[in-house]
Amino acid sequence: MLWIGLIVLIFGALALRVNIAAILLVVGAYIHFFWGDAELTYILEDMWSAIDKEVLLSIPLFLLCGSVMGKGAIAERLINVMRALTAPVPGGMALATILTCAVFAAISGSSAVTLIAVGTIAYPALINDGYSKSFALGALATGGTLGVVIPPSIPMILYGIVTETSIVDLFTAGILPGLFLTTLLGIYTVIANRHVRREAFSLTHLISTLQQGVWSLLMPVILLGGIYSGHFSPTESAAVALAYALIVERFVHRELTLRDLYDTAIDTTTMMGALFPLLAIALSINLLLTTQQVPGALTEWVSSYVSDKTTFLLIINVLLLLVGCIMDMASAILVLAPILLQMGEAFGIDPVHLGVIMTVNLEIGLLTPPVGLNLIIAMTAFREPFGLIIRGVIPFILIMLFGLLVIAFVPQLSLMLVG
Picture 1 (spheres, helix red, strand yellow):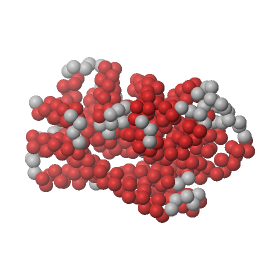
Picture 2 (cartoon, helix red, strand yellow; picture 1 turned 90 degrees about the horizontal axis):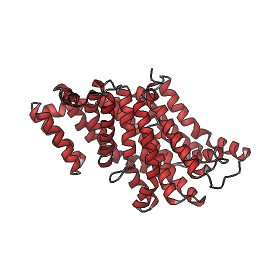
Picture 3 (cartoon, helix red, strand yellow; picture 1 turned 135 degrees about the horizontal axis):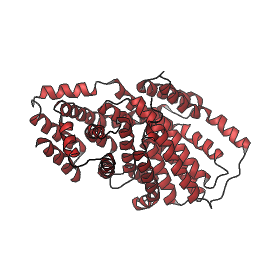
Picture 4 (tube, one colour; picture 1 turned 90 degrees about the vertical axis):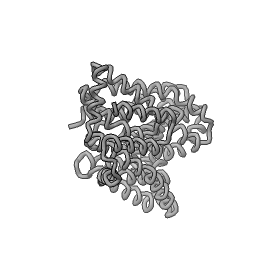
């Protein structure tokens, strides 16, 4: 059957490590030739209708916002606040790093931005405090991944667009799983560093850092409060977050120069220039697949071999973990989310819960070679050997896998807050 040839084509190309842009172009041509009318006009119309969505504007806005905060002082002041709070705890600086990543993730929506912004400040501090390089690298690389689970989350925005799932519901569903994973990482951090020297707690110092960091701490309150209260749409919240970051960094902290702003704008534009063509092709393919009922046929085929929800969940988790090793997160969501959505619904899996499961799986993929983005960023940013970083993340990956199992098989954790 034609759709079996499509699946073979996709996974064969992935196995051969073909560039994702080439995969999408070939798959698009295959689908339009066999299922569509193979006319260029129709293909272009599909691509235009696919990206003619206001919510797409939130992606570059969140990325630019995170980069602005990374260039400025918000990340540094967040670390100072968390360090003052965790001073009496064993491994306080390491715990402060995990907590800072979680808070920064609630602003930036991006794993890469979280890792770079927090890591460039926290890594030297961790080494100076006597933590091993491997642990420090593992904690930062893993803490950075919280940027894709804790809302606002750019991968969740992509999932919501390609599956037509409520982005606000996805953000809401990511809160408890994100806090759960943060708690697991925090507990391990404290246990692993229980013999590290504790810092003296000073109420005066805590009050001072809170005063200096109040503008940074208000950011996630304004951003997420606006979304969940219904005052902001995801796109509006991204614009508000960017405006707030610019005002605070430029006129309050006075850490952001015009040159910094220019550099962040160019970097964000470059990233979006690579993402948007892929998004247009992938969404146009999804439109045609849906029209031709290809996901339905694939669902029937899977259902003939898999009879229960538990087995299906195990299969898709293993599949997504493997895909995360060879494919970047955005591309995996664009290619697989629409297909997995219909199959998941056939087994009674809520689309919002599936979005969280997919995000957490691909979050772990950020830490697994050979494509693991956070491994590459850490190697480049901190100039450390790739093998050392991998050794550092292994314990954290095991913890994340345990968290994934809980999130996958306890849907209430994701859906409890969703109205």
